[in-house]
Length: 93
Ligand SMILES: [Zn+2]
Image 1 (spheres, helix red, strand yellow):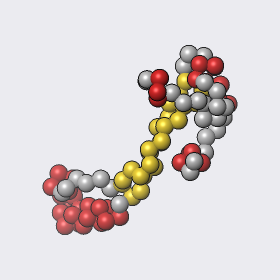
Image 2 (image 1 turned 30 degrees about the vertical axis):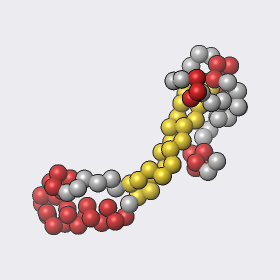
Image 3 (image 1 turned 45 degrees about the vertical axis):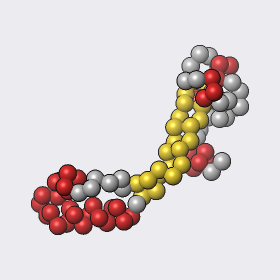
Image 4 (image 1 turned 180 degrees about the vertical axis):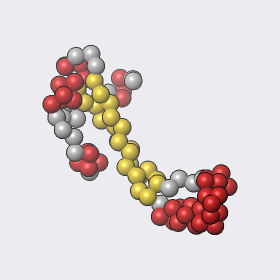
């Protein structure tokens, strides 16, 4: 992890080294289901019947969910042991 990638602790806003030499880096990936891709995958599985497991090989194997927001946060050891994280709040900042 490069110096430019460091952020202060998500909870206490202090530097990562204040609680020791270790810390957590969390990556949160917010995804949306692609309903059209899911329908296509289901349709192919229905057509193949008992051979449905082949659908992932025969079909386009496209992503069924798409990432719309990727966020990384750092959490110091003190906060990692004492704080709770509401994931939905992190994504809305
Ligand atoms: Zn902290």
